[in-house]
Image (cartoon, rainbow, N blue to C red; front, side, top):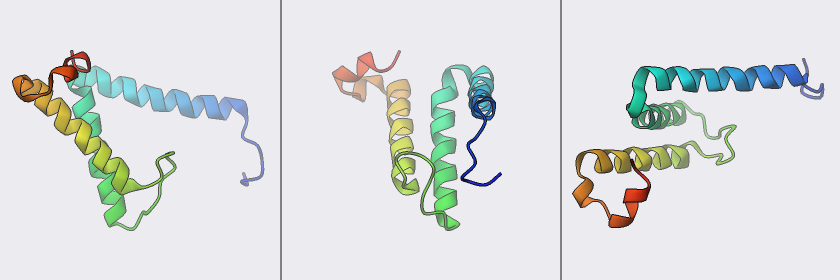
Length: 97
């Protein structure tokens, strides 16, 4: 199929369904640890891709290093909320739990 040929609607729905299936499966396996596992793996894979020469992504954010840094920040905040909630700013209480 060439790039100029429109994709059948069923194909797009099937791809989205498979993506959400993967998300649900990871959630099933990891439970409440889904966010840190997904954030850590995402950051690791974006960094690996960048090191191996991949300088852009299909993501709207476009740049692998920026995306990796975002997910590392999410992971760091989650770890802070989980293991040192007293060290986190008061306003973050509405974001976690």
